[in-house]
Image (cartoon, rainbow, N blue to C red; front, side, top):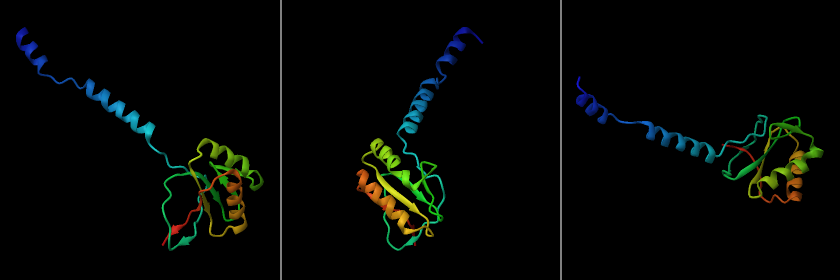
Length: 133
């Protein structure tokens, strides 16, 4: 193969480096802007409901187990100490809603205490998570 043929062959090849750069930049953009699924830290059996609506801005998740243990951010929290935790989470995201994922076997008093603490802190959008029939 002569030098002229080698030069012509090199001109006809496609350089994929710029395309890979763009793909990596897009990947980084999507990772940074993606909203991640938040979990309270424990699985609960939510009660059934005939009517429900999806909450898109749920940023504070509180789970209540069947034996009335409270879980926030994958950590068990004493019911008497939930106010500072909810305050901290609310300060981090003041536009977010609070969703209580209460087990069907838990006491209504625990759920009411959490809702009252959230209202004291200033969270006005408080919801209870249910399973849709």
